[in-house]
Amino acid sequence: WAIMTMMLEGYNIDLGVILAGKAININIGGLIVAKRAIIPTPAYYLQALSLEEYPRLVGDTLLLAALTIGLALAVGIPVAYVLARIDVRGKSAIAYLLLALRTVSQYVVIIPLYIAYSKLGLYNSFTGIALAEQVLILSVVVWMLRGFFTDIPRDIYEAATVFGKNEWQVFRRVMLPMVIPGVVVTTLFAVVL
Image (tube, rainbow, N blue to C red; front, side, top):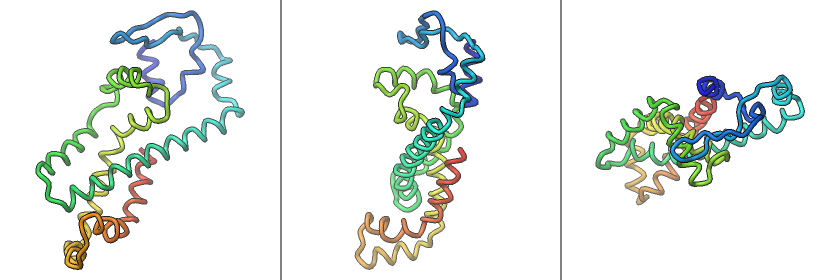
């Protein structure tokens, strides 16, 4: 049943309405993983697919997508700008570490995230899911936006610094407005991920 659970969760099927039955405890790393056995009945499937629950589920999905992508953009835009324009020691190592993070399988981080989230109180919360999704989305956001920042001619950056703008002002008033179309494209791409 563990393999079936992983496969169904991989297809984003909510197993919460299917779980029912006698109490059993499964421990991983000293934490209780499951207290209920899986007893699938047609009644639970009909409840999960009912039209009464559909608006709430769509609202939850939209809220989670907005939280996940908002967090990815809030972190990814400044990181992409630093990787594209500012000379920082280890810049290429950070860029390739983010790229390598994209190759990590979701199943590698399931148990460590479960243990950490159970101890931090993030298990079964929108914040916890949004943070876990950063493993998949953040590297794509940074690499895409890094390309958009790199495409801006260096002369524009130098002209802004000649006129007395500090690094924050160059980023906020010059570079960020120029990459807004790239941010929109990156946002749409992140929604699909």
